[in-house]
Amino acid sequence: MELMARRWGFSPPGFSADFPAGISALISDGTGGSMMRLVSDTSGGPGSLRALPPMSKPAVHQPGPDGRVANLVAALSLIERVFGLNVTQLGEICGVTRKAVYDWQAGSVPRPAKIERIYALRRAALDWERAGFGAPGARLRAPVLGDRSLFDLLRAEPLDLEAIHFAGSRLSLERESAPAADLADPFR
Image 1 (cartoon, helix red, strand yellow):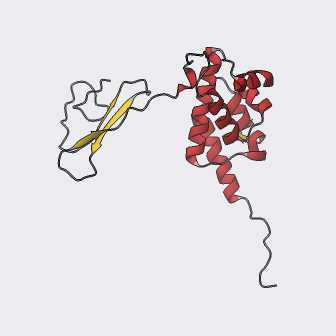
Image 2 (cartoon, helix red, strand yellow):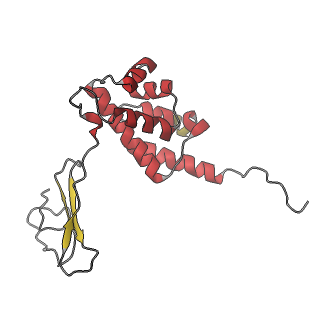
Image 3 (tube, one colour):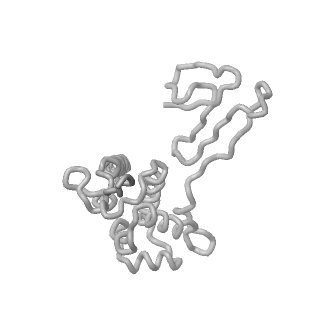
């Protein structure tokens, strides 16, 4: 499917619908890494548009001039914090040992396949956090989808982001529907 600035969203070739004045356009390069939106100016001026800066992929996969990966430590700590993992569990879902995780945190650069794995886990952690699921805590290894736990879903290759999100929904629902802890009766 072809994307053009003068067409609605993701219209197929041959379909030509011009934008009415003041309607925003979404332009994407198809990789999901670069987007620019044109939106109406909040000053109320007719027909004035402002361009937002393009959204880019995080630098977690781009080695810097010193050979280190820019946001790797931040990505690892995000994954660890959002899913409530310890370093051993973090290494297990990345497919490495605990020592390798410590080496990455100290500045060594992982192999490209591991960087892509960390990037995918980071995306899962960001989706989890945006959905407001909270850390799974003791439910990390509890069966959620059949006999598979959230931890199993995080270890799976390839990573199934939809299944992880569904597991978060289910864990959140279980947390909300669990009977409340016995509260003291204020009338006694």
